[in-house]
Length: 314
Image (tube, rainbow, N blue to C red; front, side, top):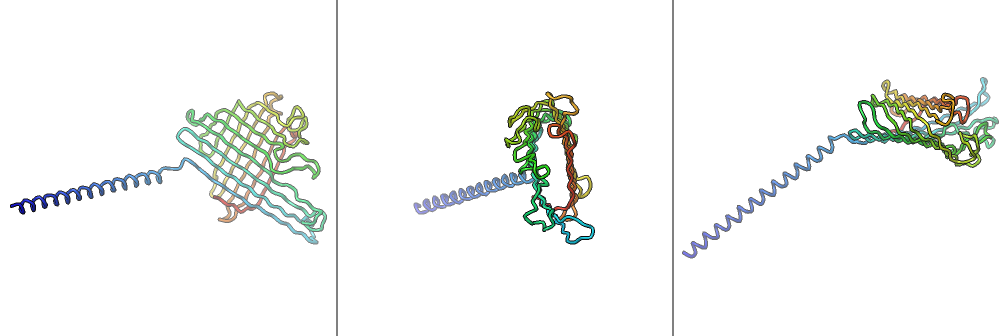
């Protein structure tokens, strides 16, 4: 009888343990399945949600060489090179947007002016491109198509610039312009915007003491920093207007409230860059810029470049 009782107890305990193990296994499997399901959902949400950042980088390399030797029609041998970089770093989240851009360019050319060859010591390299421009604009949606906006813009150049190879007219950070403004931005389409700011400050820096003279770049005294308060308007356009044809254009106006008359003292900068993709490795470009800056010259400034380039997007 005792043996039978012990046997029944052992069978009961064994079955209880087995059922408990089955429950544990079942609970473990369910927990694992739940965890896998949640992880899968997280991954799915992460991959399907669009990124709030838009980043685009473009590096363009240009070079040109002309050689003439006893050429009937005449001509001057020359060699030129330039490098351009454009970067866009834009952040959008609901009503907030923050657009940043970087434009850098530098190039030189050398001509055979003495007839002894391009690279003879008697010939020198001259700067034919030099640009530093940084832009940052933050906006918050006000109403349909309009944003409250604040802008920071910086412009300067890398290297010394000469007029007639002898007169120094610019150098690194001389001049440099820092523009800050608060206003409204109208953006009816993603590719076009108009910034209107009646509250704008522009600071001019002249790092080179030789250029920091009264009358240069709007300086009222022989000092290296000058501040102007005025209004600012910027129109920006960038779009692929046709297949493989991209247009980037901007038009800027700045007026110093302390200078009159209004029209003759409004600085104007208009620049357009057209890129035409030839194939995967080659593009043609047209770039022209018109500037009116009364503090530098009463005449219009004009620059034009046309050529082929090797674009690198990343």
